Length: 222
Image (tube, rainbow, N blue to C red):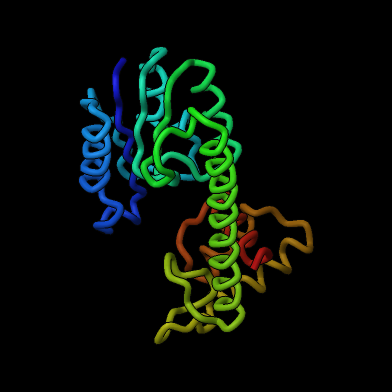
């Protein structure tokens, strides 16, 4: 029997001490000691989103390939290993079939060993997935609201606008270029022709057809 620890942080979480890799290692090592085990190795994902299925993560792949019947995997929290209920339950069933035990410290231990633990695991996996979807919805709604108020959401400046004191203010030259592009496209002219028009009559530099398409597509989507 070998005992492995699995740790993960996403890029945004690396600065958060409560979720740090060192904290997770300590929790896993302490839990193993209480069980009378020694951790044989750690699989550590640094800067990997929880939305990526475990089997598609670099260290997740290595760990799953290394596991043998009788081995034990310990992770500090459910959301360090899984965010998708489908991924969580599929992996749990596979580990059980392979006779590998999965221990989650925040769920009290072995989630492969008894029905109650599996029930809790199932419910919390679904909750974690739902919460992630809700966060995405809130972020999307907030960005849409800010965009409707012409507030700058950060990132690259949108074509056709300047950023002035945190607000999007129409850029006269680029808005005129957009108007010209709409007319040209309505008359059946190519994206390459639009790029040439922008370069020679609006001084917007050498843009290729794909860049023009992306700019016009983003405008339609907005």
